[in-house]
Length: 184
Image (cartoon, rainbow, N blue to C red):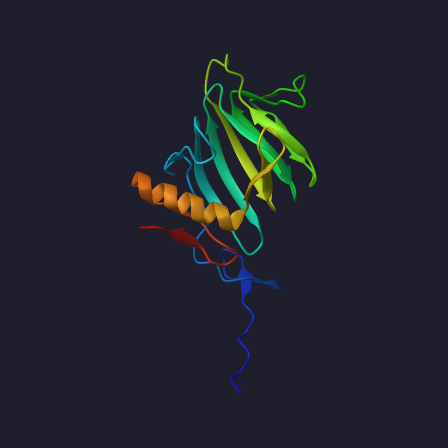
């Protein structure tokens, strides 16, 4: 039987070992959103998505979303939590029109929440949001019928297809410990 691997230990910059085991890390898993390509019309007309992190096994995805004035994401139900930080512009949930999200707003959505995201048509600029989701968005048509599901697995497929069709090469942070993922 092979010997068990020795635990990795973090060290100080002078080489002294810290009393905790750690995962080996050869590089920081970091992306500059100014260098991450956008995939257009991923969530519908007037939207673009920059994929930052995707972990299909944990059902977690992190994207930067840009939406033009008048763009909308259909009514959807969250199976898990979502966190949205608005970097630029304004957006609302149609169900909460008196609570606009503006640059600097942080929104936490518990699992089970239902809403329709829209950027007002009279907005002066595109809206940019950092969106972190665990679980899935179950999407419905305007008449209340089931439309589709977006989760980490389907997002990986959809973004891969749209990126390929648009000639975009994706580079994002993959599942825990997997490092970067790059597409052709």
